[in-house]
Image 1: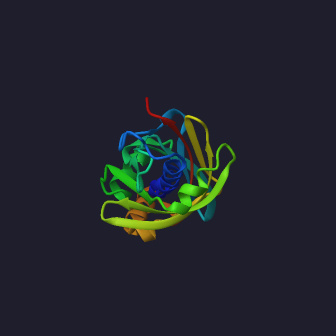
Image 2: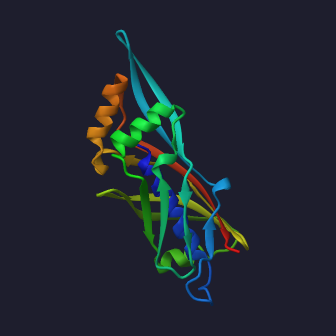
Image 3: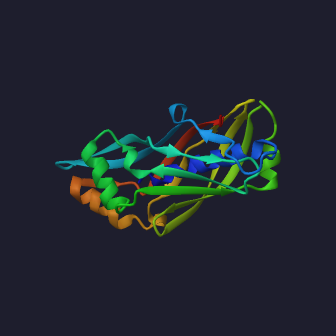
Length: 208
């Protein structure tokens, strides 16, 4: 379910790559994601059956394993998410999601193509820039195209990016309905929402 999370991060990475002038050294890594000040979270909605009663429940989860680096002037940016780093607060549930929904895949990747329009929009200095970015999320053989509204703030040696509103990702569009139904049956839930809202806050720093 949390797979959609990755999308937001990709957006952020793209903005980062758009902000600087081309690297005079040509092709070296200029920006690296700082995990300690970055986050990727998602919410799940479900109904719990108790006797004849249905209770709605909303829970928050996150991915801790995020990695991304790029050079200024790159035409595309990729964010890698370690699916094994999922944290829903319940270890056995984390394992079930990995086996049933992610089907044992170790990584998910989000990529964004950097256009001239993005480069110009992200070169606005310290003032926050609002952008709507297209991205592609890949999980095994499945892929999904999404859009996210993000805010980008460029410092002299830092780049901060955040989603301005949650991005809903469809489990059905990622061919994950069989896994979602398996999870529902194992836990005995009434239902699990197909759309997972994802939010991200990313911080990049210039590489040493």
